[in-house]
Length: 254
Length: 287
Image (cartoon, rainbow over all chains, first blue to last red; front, side, top):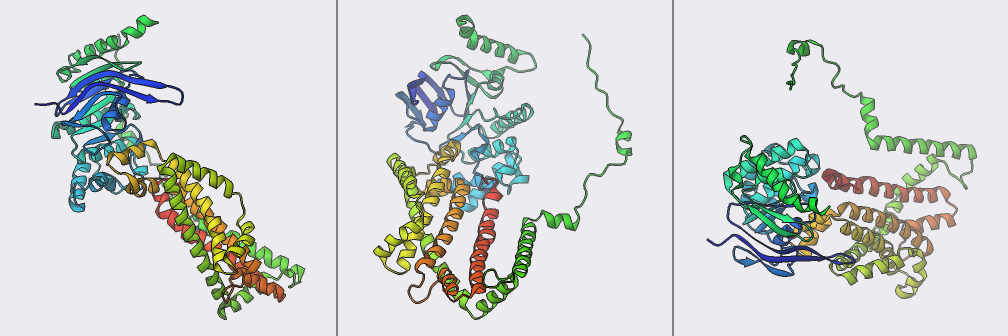
């Protein structure tokens, strides 16, 4: 079976006011259906830029990116983005309207069915209580769950998550991570997840791509991440290994 | 190595103690005072009382009629249909100018957000014309459009266009990058993108622009009518004020001024407040 997402030899460059910065250099990886694929690296490794490129917001200078065989050229609802920022919800729409919005805008479903599906996904993230509330009345964690419901309701080829839990407090973050895994167990969606937290990567992912900074290059890929567990200490060992791998250069360089 | 211990509080002890006051209902007076409308009404009553006192002490209706005289004259003029007619004449012109100004502002800002040169154009032209008082264009407008509503509409457009365009544009610019990316994620582009994402997201600024535009337009109109008011048969409120000054009917002048103020208050406190309550306040995006 061909990979769902195929990123091959992608170099990404962006312009600042004074220079052209290379964010990633010749990065390749593939994501299969139902993968929980994590891009992990320290800041400056271009992981967010890479995710934005998969989202279609920027074009690679070199290399190719394909989703289900189609080349990625612009943003599209087959790749739903979930951002870190809480302001990703449309403040002028209620929770229900927010989840329905992409379904209606892309004419994926007529209004009635869109509402039914939206309600079903809001139920999945257990926010039925606030279905008619406006986003500014919700807590940060609730906003992120609405964003996840909105992304999932579209049933896209792949969900692109850009550190969605990074701005949450530690307790809420853990709850959200558990909930995401629970949702995955129910629907087996495909997700490309960006994080700078090694623990989060191990908890969320079944595969992890390790990136090194300046410019971002692939350092290693960790597979079968879902076989480790917190109980026997294997997760902690993996965390230590990844940590040593990512920061080995940094230590010798100083 | 020791172990931490958790000391549970006695449950009986927690429930037995009488709860302190958790919630207290506000008194009627406190509730009333929390209503901005009530507070403002009190201020207005206070000002009217001060006016009445000063007018009575001065006792010179030609210079400063009392509040009572003004209200009586106003009632008379409203009953005989003069003020409503004049106010309607003013408002009709105002709506034309306001609508045309907003339409032009919309075109300018949509051009400005779609191209960089459009942005530069809008920024340059608003910087040039925004400081120019609309009244200063009136002599020119009279030559171009003659004595009539054409000239009034022209100066009104001038007074509405720039503040609305400026605020709308700065509102669009301050729409967060995340929201823009969200909109594009759903394949929105062009006008649907503007109407579905940018305008609601920038609505707080747009509303501010509309409010400023309205205030500018209203005062420009009254001033312009004072200059050459009588056009196409009947003048507006500005002309009413001017006429009555010539007749030395000062209470009527005051009544005219009061009408201008009252209409301004109604638009600001009823129309714009209602829009605000149902949009930016409900959405929590008030700037």
